[in-house]
Length: 585
Image (cartoon, one colour):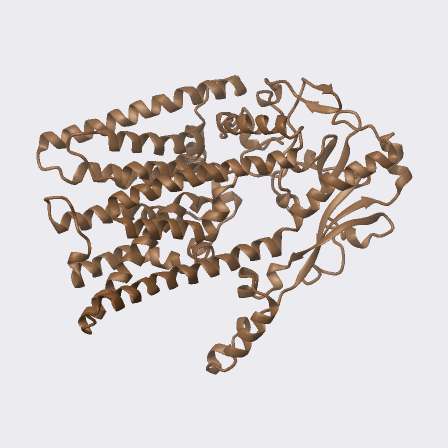
């Protein structure tokens, strides 16, 4: 479906990025006989493989430049964090930018060279690829590397001018190499010359009144702090204390950070600070923005892992220093204690991350389950039983969603011949609409479109850049064949309102095909909804906490620990079968 960003009027989404992924999708579509759900997961497997390669490069550079221990801690933190699990296979521009950021840091972690520009050239290229092809704001991750190139190990003025020239050349060459093909591909689809990354920046930064990201919602300053802790738990806290910890280490154990450079220990600490700065810079830039989304932090996820790995290394050094003060000279005993400490940190944080990942699956997987049932079981069985002939143009099956529009996973989960329709709900923003298509070929009952799709450049009415509601998006519920709806018994009133009816209770019109439990997050315990543990574990934990001081046990969060409220996420079929048959036959 077309969102306003893909309208040729605004053109703030690049078709080059889409085509890059479509190449992979087309290959798997042929392999899996056009099974769209299998293609959906196959593409994500490719994402996961690409992310693994990027993580490997990131790890190898950390081992080479920061030491084997930091490298080991880095790979473990990336493996165990819920954040990396969530971001690694997401079909989002910020995920692609995360990949390119890791490759950029494969080069950026190297020391600044006084003779070669390879480090900065390749860093600029990979940062530029992520920012121009995917998400322009990911360029912020490369700022410290550019500053370091200018200020470190630059004794002579002539050498400084040489560094500046490197930066300028690297920027110009990389921009041309990436932007020219990007503009050509977007011209092919938009049928006009447009620079999409520039359009994105202009809209989001200079959009003016009633435009820009803030109209889509704002969050308090601590949104990313809470989100970071949810996705990385105590690793996020360690990432936050990495530079303060480095400063403390320089005082109590200055020899902890060594350098191969003749510039001395001060350079070693400055070198490491510049590698820890990108995370702080990223967090600062996005904390001060009113509009916040979890995906905006994806680019910083590997940086969180890097900073936390350095922090673990420093903490290990502090304890090692403490043991030396306590005259623990038995080398094997000290070594065993240090290994046990780092292993305990990794295992503890990994266990929390596993509980977080499990919670996301157990509490919120109902939509994917429902749509898979619709794709593989419901539609094939109905077509076979009724001998229906369906296609997208003349006889589509109408699947309607109201307030649950934002949980629709993807058109990969809609069988051929099914159209997604929107019902009016309390949401009063702008919804997407189908592309305007002229070229249609029905080949062996498979929906096919030509490679050149007119809908990418044809201008449709009914789009705006102010998130204003467009009434042409809504469908008449009497024409719906199926409805997907969520009933949260604890959240919503027992009475229907004009916009959001309780379709599940309208048993005279709709029959239940399948329902799955879906967490009512608003009315569930905050800790229990964030982490999945078996109920018996929550009971024992609650009993243990009851022995603690009254101030702790008296809070509502502790009192309701383990309590979860559930709703029903359901697929409903129109009960009047004769009406459905008359529409389709």
